[in-house]
Amino acid sequence: MSAVHHAAQQGFSSQADAYARGRPDYPEALDDWLKQALGLGPGRQVADVGAGTGKFTPRLVRTGAEVAAVEPVEAMRAKLSEALPGVRALAGTAQA
Image (tube, rainbow, N blue to C red; front, side):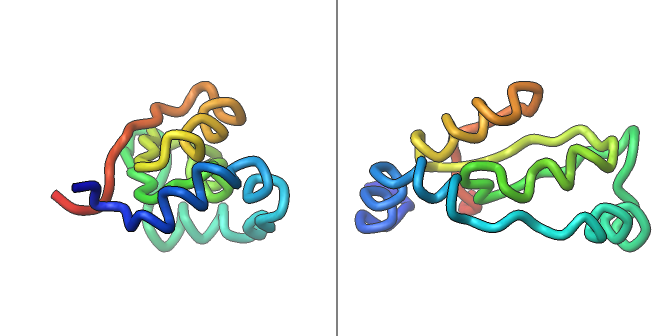
């Protein structure tokens, strides 16, 4: 049994393009906060768990940290990889 609810799996699989187009971006001010409050930067590693199509992932990349994006829905992960080919995209969930 998949850890992803069937409705979410189906919806995100069939609507990944619409989600990528319609989901708003995060504000640029977040870049400095990630560096200052969380200490992200070169030499650090961070995981974007539940990364979806990668809307938040560029904010992590801009810190200079090494980013791994984890996303269970293949169609969403494919959009992320298309937009951010330098980011390691992995299949998975937040559950161990």
